[in-house]
Each structure stands twice: as structure tokens, then as C-alpha cells.
Image (cartoon, rainbow, N blue to C red; front, side, top):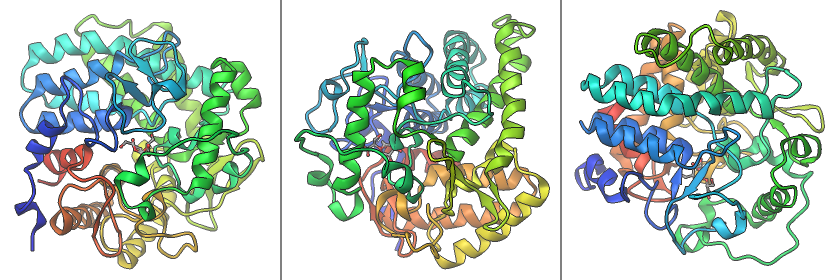
Length: 429
Ligand code: 2M8
């Protein structure tokens, strides 16, 4: 059976979730614009032939950008009662209202694709001119505020900032965060099966951190010094690195010809220095024993020894050595044998692997896409093809769900989900 045949078309899913220039991940469960969802979804609009709509997604996301350059993980463009924590909990003074943390910045890599693959040159040039300065400031913010000691490894202050909310990687660092001392009502568990969502234990700490940011007035220095959760997230580091590479290429190859950026200016110089620092700094996160990269708890000063898809994303960044890439390629093949629907977000042999609980084991198509790109670029076409086929199987089994049980292919979380539809349009079709 092919579930795609019974489902809305991928393009219709995007149209269903379009709230006027921005696309919600899915109606009800996530009723606002999310940062990396928006970027991935823009690729779907591009593949559906609506280039103007793709660029609009980017512009609307940048409406949430803070003066310091941060592009938040949620932009609350409108009102909605179905999500917790909403704007009143975050307490951010910005119009439109936003959250106070960011998310993996895949945006610049997506913009490069929109620019290169779009057919309407005038539109692409006009939109690049409108959006490029903001994205340069975004990347400069990451390195300045999140790596003030120039380690080459930016840090995150919240599991939500990784986008991989309840990954086993964050179990250790989250244990150092106190629970929030207030009552609250979750909305997610009323909308989808609670067995597919994080536990109350985690939410108590997620909300503590939200309040902590607010109490400290989002002060960069104070947060770096005092935030009880400070993690060098290998996925965030890798996606940022790839984004910065793509951003520099976009500036030097395309925007320069259009007179949009000074290629000899301070901003590009600083971004290139950051690339060099990460190329070196990321090696401190390699585990020869496990054969992949790891995240690190920067407060406790320990590597987080969990084999997850985050630890393979250095392939997407291009920061792994050839020998490291080979190790990760071998690991991936055996990983896919144990859980054949996409790449399980946590290695199936892990004691913390849960095939349908959110980021503890299910497979997520946008991550699979980045892994496949990484494999391809390291000359591992066989692994890239295997990942693609395993991802196609998910949609055939279940349609456009938020994520998939990596052992059975069952669709989990929200349905009619934008990034899954977008990945089908752009990558899998
Ligand atoms: C999930 O995260 C949000 C918080 O940001 C949530 O559970 O409430 C994650 O899967 C995240 O990666 C994603 O961007 C977001 C919207 O799809 O949902």
C-alpha cells in the first residue's frame, strides 16, 4: 500500500498550512512559524514552482530577527491557544513577538539553493538583496554570543535550540537544571499521543530555562556565565558551519557580482575566521571508540556519549576527515539494517532508543536529507542512496507525518506536516 495515494498531495499540505506568507509546521500542534521548519519548507515551495512564496517564507522569518542579530526559533505572527509555551510565557518585547532562543540555522544553505535553483533571476536577485544582510548578522551573532571564548564550538542554552528536543544527548545536561516552580498546562499531549512526546520531567526543566532567560533579561554575558544548561551541540555546530560556508560562497560568487556585499569587509573576514576555528575545534568532539562525533556538556566538561544522527552531521558540515567519514558511513549502514525506516535519530542499539518517542529514535526526513548530502559529498553514494530509499519508505508507509517510527514506519506526531511534505517535493520525488 502506498499511503501517499490516500493523503493530500504534498503541495496541498503546504497550502493547508500557509497562513499568509508563512507556513505553520502543522495546524493545531504548532500554530506559529518555526525557524528551521521555515527554511526546509521554503524548499518545498520552490519545488512546487512557487519561488516567490519560497522567498516570502524567508522574509517573514526574518521579521522576527532581534537587534543583536538572533533569529528566534519561533515567530509568533498571530494568536493561537493551542500551543504552550506561547508568547506570554516567553515574555519577549519584540514585534512580532518571538521566543528567546534560536534553532539550527539551515536557512543560509537553503537560501543558496533558492538562489541557484530558482528560474526567475530578477526575483532571486531582488530577494537576496533584501535578506542577505540579515542572515549575515544572524551568523555573526551565533559566533559572537555563543562562542565568546573562540573555541570553534558554539553552545546552546536549551534543548529546543537543538531542534532535537528530547534527544538522549540532553539527558545529562538537563539533570543539572531545576524544575520550574509554577503550575502550567501543556497543550501538546492533548493533541497527539503522549507516548510520542517528551515527559513532564523534561518540560519542567524546559520551562525553568524559559523563565531563566526572561529573569536575566536575555543578557548574553550573564547567560554564558550562569545558564545551568550550556551544551556544545554537534548538530547545531555542524549546521551552522555548513550554513556559514554556503553564506560566504553566496556572498563571493553571487552577491558580489550584484554589489550586495563587500567581499573584503570585516563581516566576511570574521565569518572565515569562525570557519577555521570550527574546523579545528570540532575535533575535540570526535569519539574514536564510538566512531562518530558527540555533543559536549560545557558546564560539566564531559562528552555526551550517545550515538545519534547529530553526531553524523559533521558530514553535512564537511568537517570530518576522510577516515572519520568512512567510519561513520560503516556505522550508518549497520544502523539502517536495525531500523529500516529512515535513519533512527538515536542508534537502535542504544539502551535509550525509543522508536516512536520524538527525538529518541524516530526518523526525521530533513535530517535524513542533510545526512544524504553529507554522504554524497564524501563520495559515499551508496549510503546516500540507502538513506534516500529508507526515507521514501516512510512516506509510502504513512504519508506526510511529522516523523516516523524508525522500526515500523508508522507515522507519528502531527499529520499533514510541512517539512515532510517539503522534503518529498524537493528531495524524494
Ligand atoms: C519541535 O519543537 C517544539 C519546540 O520548539 C515543541 O515540541 O514544542 C521540534 O521537533 C523542533 O525541531 C521543531 O522545529 C518544532 C516544530 O516542528 O517542533
